Image (cartoon, rainbow, N blue to C red; front, side, top):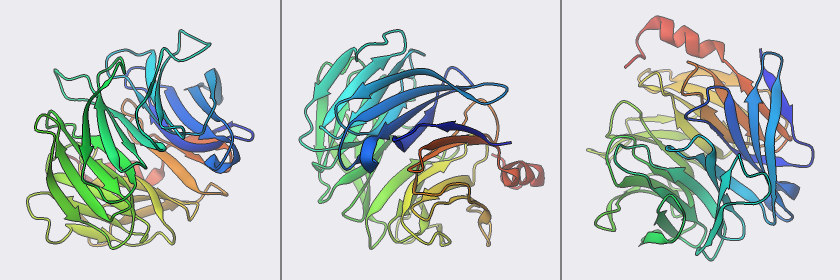
Length: 323
């Protein structure tokens, strides 16, 4: 059963399931498709009968990404079209706890680190820089330069401390070392803009990319001459890729072709299923960390959807995709 939350006149850009509360999800959304107008940050709870609004905040510019704190279940960060990161607290209904404005263009990506002993935020911007922040957003600790195009995605490694990957309009996937403030690896992963990347949760060397060329590529960072798998199927740009938290070789992608697709990159025929339940661009996608095989997505059709694709439980039963 698919549960739906409708957000009239708000076009969804990103969703993320809470790392603490199994039925809670945040959604970053924008008016007028993010081209003009305001943004809204939504906190939603799945209930037995549907999806309930817990909290919503308005922002003066579009919101393009959201990430939950890994240390405090009430705290989240959003990235805005005005170049800001805002620190929000569900206990504070009025305004953000802090606003950090160093980026000079849209912040399109925010991510909270997951490795032990670290509590950092990374942001990626259309100003071609990535910045690393302390958890209070008091100031940026490092600014990383090297991309020659817009940065669309910045994701911390779940395995390697102080390491994140970024995807850019320059067609490269880059891996960064925060301590050394350097780019360790630059992979010309696609001959088109790369809108998304994600790390495998079970192998520290595996990263996926999703591109405007409509393909998902899976990379082994130890040998980047060619991808482990290049997976065609989408008919327009891929907006986001996400690895399953439960199955090593399973990942999902969402696209401007209005679909969400599920893949097992270890298979010769990797496409498991195509979900067609939106009537506009699908921009946000996440797996629930607590509930196996549950997926959340959001679209420019003004909906957030929570569902469990049949193909994922089938893949789990086959056994070939488990860690």
